[in-house]
Image (cartoon, rainbow over all chains, first blue to last red; front, side, top):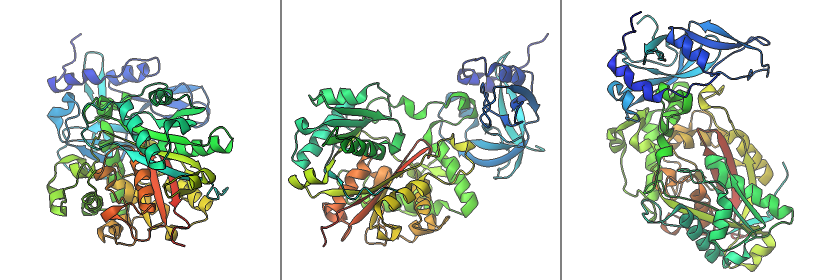
Length: 145
Length: 382
């Protein structure tokens, strides 16, 4: 099997990969396959991210993983100009958005290499970028771009 | 809400030099500020029954209160370190009042001191755990996310944010201990560099060394002391708590509930307030705070600042010593110190005329915590 191609500019994000835990491993494996998964509570059907061992809504410990299309809209965003970390330097200014997922949870996500200005309310869709042979990162782009 | 009935007073305030202060350790900032506050009150360290503190932002040492007590050469009955970020310094007053009410203490020092300007400040821009890959580092980006949402919901503009920074700088210009005193215009603001849009550099408070402290005691004890007592009229707290981007509403804060609690406890209204000292780590925060407290309608904070109604001499002077934006970026203790000085008539050329009631607003995290305190010099002008 051929190793997937990794663009140099994304390899630098390896340093920012958080430690692997029992909780985030399924999410990371899914992302590496090119899929986004969320947790869903078997008791109250709420979706949640980030992953925990219980449901924030009802407290149940019965949770399952569900593949998500990751679609949603921008709730708020900022355009970062400050080079806080070298991995993001090639993308400055880059956008970080609070994404309101259609399933309910909100998440923070980078929107890199945007070619048009974004606005609150814009529909967005995931763009998963490979960092290493086994790790990928979630980014977002405008729907239809 | 139970009334405090003016039973508790702030009887001494003190601070170290703000800004760049090399060679002064974190503990020295605390001890020097406490000793200055004791001197101000006419007390000595041996008079203290309690030492309460907020941990330095740049590091998070364990048992910090006892360490400060040791450095003061005392073994107090009451000591604690509170973790409410920028709202800790009012939360600690509440803890002090509890200790006095329980008969455990009569005189308590509260302090904060840190040296992130000349010491370490690595913790200021640390990646936020699993969010590091999202590219969100440091407080400015997070508060900018709040500001963007406020602009979207209420039409708040960058010019209005500029006017917050300008109003507080105008006051810092009259404060020789302010870290930044040089005046600037809206054009200067507009040409300052972007940090995280919608924030430019001048929307952000500086990183500062410094220490500040105050002494809390009973009204009876206060009457024996030389300084004009400043009465604690009401305290309120409310904590939005959740990670900011997951909160149902982003362009709000705990000020609404904390403020209502403080006003009810004091038996006062927003119209009774002569000036405010508002936590202004970023320009958006005072706008939201004024709105949530009910000084202006929701969404009108920006125009209130733009019309210069918050200047000294205006209808509600805010951040009379320059606030976090200009006096010192320290997390809030200094706001209490300035409110006390105003109420004692020690504001020098920045004195708010006939100031009788002041509001101190503190919040921490990304508007994660909130505390409000109303102070007065009741009796002075009678």
